[in-house]
Length: 117
Image (cartoon, rainbow, N blue to C red; front, side, top):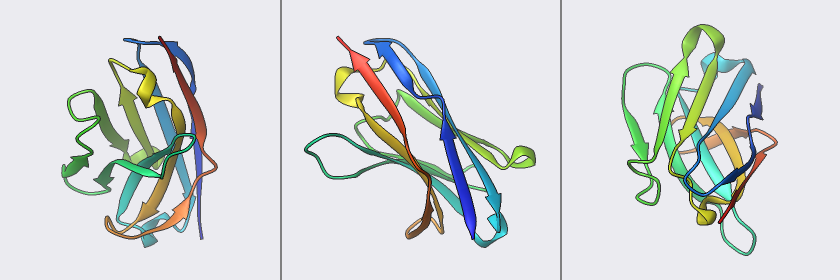
């Protein structure tokens, strides 16, 4: 089993920045990738981006490309989501997930991000 704990959410004004963290513990070797997703009220869950534990391959949704950056610290089993130039439409609960890059098997509890205009 893999446990994921997100942190770093909060409220920020449009144009501001936040950095989310996702600390993984347990059988982390069973997953090769970490992903970020978000869920806004009245919308479906949206893929934000993902990174593999090895290599530099990352992928982002078009809606966040150029503004969000995913990075990792393998020594800390932690993945980060740096969010810059935030917009009100980025308001959502953000979740991290562990999987193989295409399927996601373990999820965190989520952290709220609210961007005010």
